[in-house]
Amino acid sequence: MSIWGIILGVVLAVVSIAIIVVIILQEGNQQGLGVVTGAADSYFSKNKARSIDAFLSRWTKFFAAVFVLFVVALNALATFKIL
Figure 1 (spheres, rainbow, N blue to C red):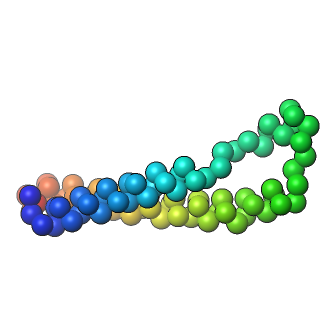
Figure 2 (spheres, rainbow, N blue to C red):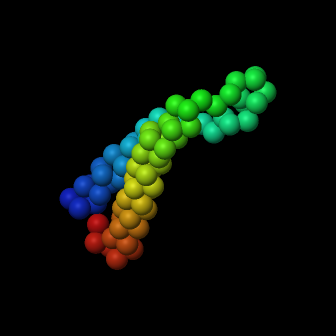
């Protein structure tokens, strides 16, 4: 395995861990549970979805795109026996 294969593999592992962390930090979609318990949505809980959850959602999409690019790059390098 060449140095490029090792570098791409390490970056792929780091991006994989980043995806896992960002997904774990996101809150679940629990809109229906407030109706059952009688809790009403407050102003702050509605705006929280626009700030933190939207930020984490964007980073999840970014890391997923980077992950796919590195997987395709590693596969292409392995197919053409460059690694």
